[in-house]
Amino acid sequence: RKEVEQDPGPFNVPEGATVAFNCTYSNSASQSFFWYRQDCRKEPKLLMSVYSSGNEDGRFTAQLNRASQYISLLIRDSKLSDSATYLCVVSGSNYQLIWGAGTKLIIKP
Amino acid sequence: ETGVTQTPRHLVMGMTNKKSLKCEQHLGHNAMYWYKQSAKKPLELMFVYNFKEQTENNSVPSRFSPECPNSSHLFLHLHTLQPEDSALYLCASSQEEPPSNTEAFFGQGTRLTVV
Image (cartoon, rainbow over all chains, first blue to last red; front, side, top):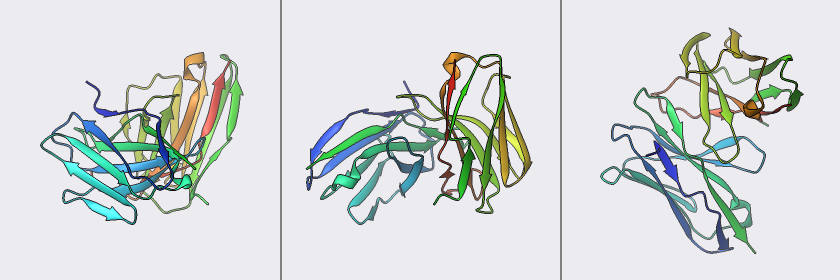
């Protein structure tokens, strides 16, 4: 089993719709969780950290489910500019960050 | 504009060449990283420097040699690479090394092609 696993997609979603995707992780001792966004041929940028109680930033909501070992990202009222690859990042056993391969999201007009 | 700059942006090199990638961060961070990103694969952490000292070497082949002369600069020296080393090489920095919950800032990467 991969340490951090994501559905590669692509998720094709109409503009204005709500979309959600999950990321599963294998290390139950992981303490830090993040979602990064990477645009085509660009560098990754932090979208949001994921806290135990869940957190929201505008149209974006992140949740952590420790029992089932996954984190989720929900995007409401999706915009064309949300098209990107979303990378899940989880801290590993030696605290180093383990990256998922990403979920590609395409928002269609 | 990113606070982490990488040069060159693109590099094509033969298997017998020697080249270096450069990274500079203007953010006053203490930790710097080299990552490799291959198509459709997760980012792979290669090296970590914290306060100029190497703290992590993730079983990277010796044909990749990092150098950190000060906390603002990081180099990756390349020699006798293989075609499978072709990838996007990303430099990143953060205020502190994990487990601190700090954001990593990335440079725009060097797209390397080994021919």
